[in-house]
Amino acid sequence: MVLLAILSIISSKSEKIIAQRTFHDFKVIDISGNEFDMKTLKGMKVMVVNTASKCGFTPQYKDLEKLYQEYKNRNFIIIGFPANNFLRQEPGTNNEIKEFCRINYGVSFPMMSKISVKGKDIHPIYEWLTSKDRNGVKSSKVKWNFQKYLIDENGSLVDYASPGTLPYNDKIINWINN
Image (cartoon, rainbow, N blue to C red; front, side, top):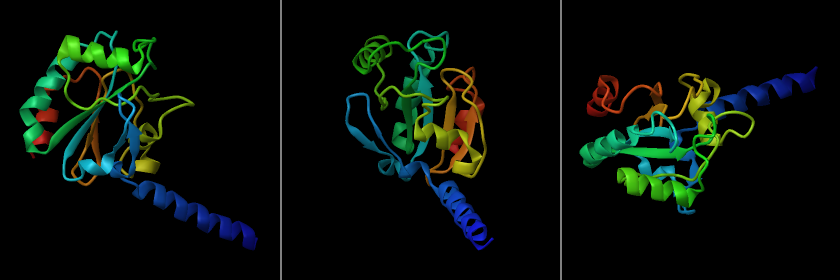
C-alpha cells in the first residue's frame, strides 16, 4: 500500500514536470547536422511546420519564405521539420532536401534534419507539440505535411493550423501581429 502511494505521488509529480517543459527546452539537429538549441528562440514567436518536397502542399514553401522575410525582424521565425510520414512524400536526404528548398523556393528560414512527426518513432519535439500531457495546452494529430504549430515568446504552445491553412491566413497573421 505504501509503495503504491509513493509510486502514485512520483508519477503525478513527473507528469507535472513533463507538462511544464517548454519548446525552449529542446535541442535538435539542423539540416546541416549541427545542434540547434531552441533556447536561442526565447522572445520570438515560432511557427513549426512539418514539410515535404513531393506533396500537393509543397508550394507553401514560397509563402512560408515570403512570410518569414516579411516578419523575421519582428521577433518571428519559422522552423521547418522535413518528415516522410505521409505517402513517402519526403524521400530525400537532408542534403537533397536542403538543395531542393534553396533552388526551388529560396528557403532561408531554419530547416532541421528529417524526423518523424507521428508513430512509434515520433521525435520528442513532436511528442511535445501534439500531447496536452506534455505541452499543457492541447493535443492534436499531425494530419498531413505542412501542419503549423504556433509557439509564443515564452516557448508555450498557443495553437496549431491544419496543413491546408495557408501561411498568410488571418489566424496566422493576427497571431504574429498580436
